[in-house]
Amino acid sequence: MESQSTTPLCLAIEQLPISKIYSSPHQMRKHFDDAALRNLANSMKQEGLIQPITVRKVGNAYELVVGERRLRAAQILGWDTIDARVIDISDEDAAVKGLIENLQRADLSPIEEAKGYKQLVDHPYNMTQEAIAQRVGKSQTAIARALALLELPSEIQDLMPRGIITETHTRSIRKISDRFKQIEIARQADRSGWTVKEMERRVHEVLKQTGEPLKRRANKSKAHQDDPLAKSWRPILKMADEAGVMVSAVTYEGSGRWMMRLEAKSVSDPRQALAEFFTRLGHTLNGPIPTDL
Image (cartoon, rainbow, N blue to C red; front, side, top):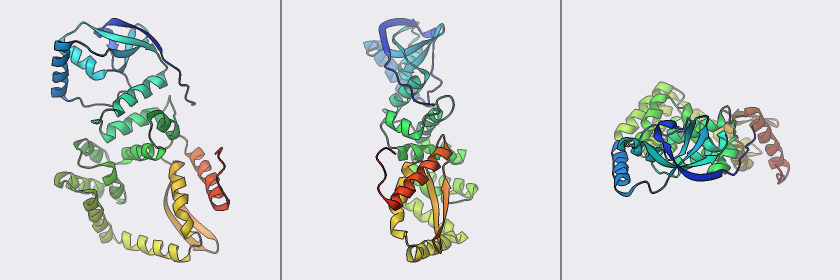
């Protein structure tokens, strides 16, 4: 589905019944700090509502676009009505606008952020990672890494809002193939407050016990010694990342043959992502990539 961004038509600020306003289904924030909401409610009681909420009309009701915390604070105060700016906006733009508002707040957890992106990737929006990246002002790589968090066991996802385990920690965790071991080491990291370097060291120890690092190191060393394209892989892997494709293994088998393990799980159209990757791969090996790709 192509993005059909339209300029919202802003209407006058209205006093709307709170009972007719419902939260957006695109709201990825699931946890609201009760103390912070009470503080906001006290401020609104003393100073009034400084900035109206933003809604869009849906049938006989209104869907909240921006201002979830202000609406909740008004409910705490028992207000019957609230100042609201009504805008004419598409489903997609409503989802993106709500996401951007939340992303501008520092307390959004990595998992909440990832779930917000996932809503835009899935039906009915079917947005590409590149389109999302443009709308929220981030790189496509950042979007792909965020979405990859949702492939982690739910037990690890539940730990991440605590702030000890970050997205960077999870890059090491994903090197462990045993999901139960992933959960175990993530819980240890959360309890002990491991740094990223400590997590890397512990994961290396786990993999060493299974023999995986020795095997991978040997393959990597052989590839650098024998692979005629060994010096070319770094820009190729970067290019793959930009196309939404993960290259988790490259093995040179001799006689001009390579074995590559490719994954395109975190994109809405894996076939298109792979096609773009191979197109870019050919130009990377044979010449500059055309500017229209």
